[in-house]
Length: 96
Image 1 (tube, one colour):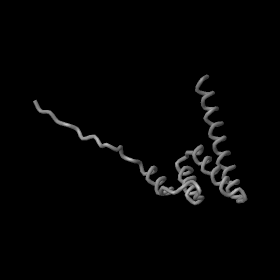
Image 2 (image 1 turned 30 degrees about the horizontal axis):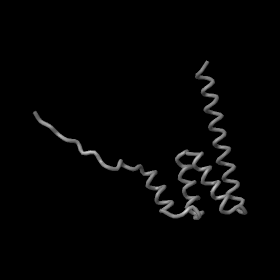
Image 3 (image 1 turned 45 degrees about the vertical axis):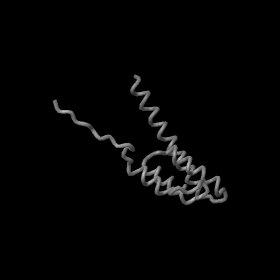
Image 4 (image 1 turned 90 degrees about the vertical axis):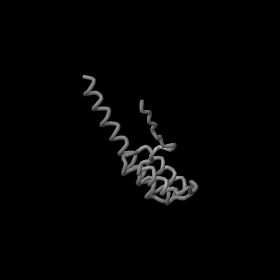
């Protein structure tokens, strides 16, 4: 009887997204607005609008006078709302 053993990695493989997110933050503290902006961009590319909205909120908290952060936050929230509205209409169609 042949017995083989499998090697299981102690740490699971990380996705390229996780690596980019860590590179963006780089272990920096939450007061780095550039890191929040870059992380928001990464989340937007991935379609993770709730996380991008959180990053935009942190940008607004850090620099409330910057109107571009407010504008980008409004765009993210509008995209998030449109996405939920579309998913809701699909759910209604599926339930009929």
